[in-house]
Image (tube, rainbow, N blue to C red; front, top):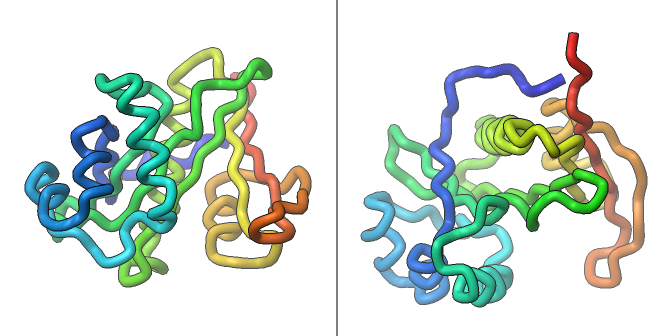
Length: 175
């Protein structure tokens, strides 16, 4: 099942070199570029920002399967960050990741972001599945994926965080 098409609660803004450079620099540059305020801990995994910035420096016009800034349009606040971890693999799978600022968690925003990313992925006819990983225990992110039509397909041991669960959302069969 593709997540239901409800009116989006977030605007997913495609990342580019200018936005990522501002995110790494901190201060008000990102706020000015996006025209929004920035929630505390919006990035979730700030250590990824310099790596993404370096990748975008090689491809400054952006990447189809790249980062996304999650903006709550009514409050005009950057509340999260995520996106695709690269183009489809040789077996036609893309992987997503996402984080929502703590002050905005528990409001369905991660579920909205995941639904939008799944729809975006399946707009590409070559993509057969979307993968994600969570920590290997019951947690809010695992619940987001379950609600979004993902199923747990395995687990692995990550040297940094321990057990992680591997989730997959298969492209629905045509009716």
